[in-house]
Image (cartoon, rainbow, N blue to C red; front, side, top):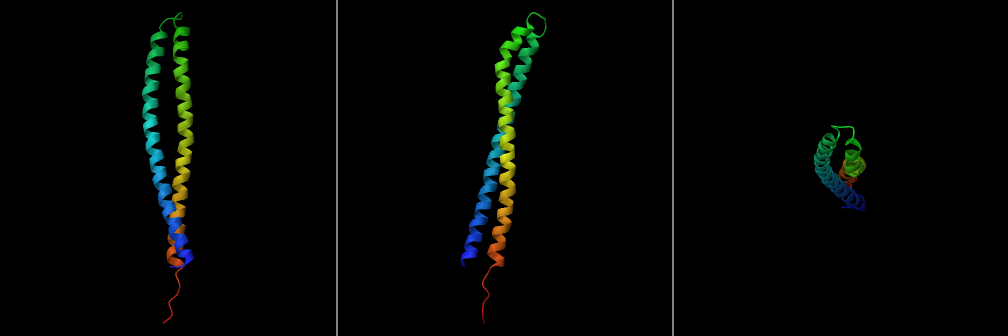
Length: 112
């Protein structure tokens, strides 16, 4: 193997690593979405209990505003990591294609 083929193999392996990283991030995103969904459901239940009378509505908003703020921050974090995972996937696929191309197309010609 020549230097270009070795470099292609390293790029290929790097692409595979990027795909694994993207898969891990996507798994964490799914878990975060489940947690946010459950938390949002609890906040909605709590605020619906306090929204029954106009006198208790401000109390309910005060109690649930902190949790809602954290939920919104979590949604923003998930949106950020969704973009990161997509970029890792795209970069990984490109690296695999380039690395495989370098390994197989840049072989030395054998003289007979």
